[in-house]
Image 1 (cartoon, rainbow, N blue to C red):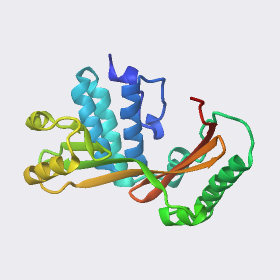
Image 2: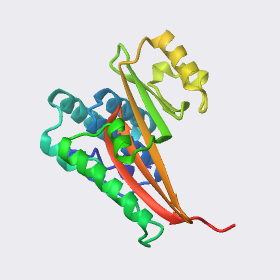
Image 3: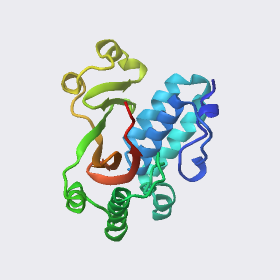
Length: 245
């Protein structure tokens, strides 16, 4: 399948336009869009280099996208682009129940307060969220990506979820790394080995999802808040009735 059929472009400027995508392409597109929006240019280019290896028939198209990202890396994103494409999602997740109760009203109030604080101050920290909720959050998901730039200006990227390796993107000359590591390996072991061979990574990105759960009788509400490199990147909540056993 041609890459252009899977992903029509990057979520910016002339490259913006999303089609319905298979799940594996959605994951790649989401990672690419996130890297661009947080101006992680090395990470974005590493993702595109990996796509070029996976979809050689679309090499020219992908190289054009890579050139566009390299141009953006010198100019940065305009405020208009950030506002149009990169504003954090502040919309409520679909609720399994539409029933309004004191609990759903309470959690919706928390959600609105977090959103209002962000809109007023331009950012909100984890500590400020805990001050609003009066409770510490629980880490539900921890994703990280480390990127190395090689002497040939290619990129190596390692991604981890909850401290385990989930993906390794390498150019052809570093395929030996694929034989050494496998999905599920602990991040410390992988990173120590890669740092010994490649040196310190040129960039690192970490996404943490915190959740708070509230219960009243059979009604349970879960509120989540996302942070990328300690910067707020989105929030949402859902409520539902506990299933009967």
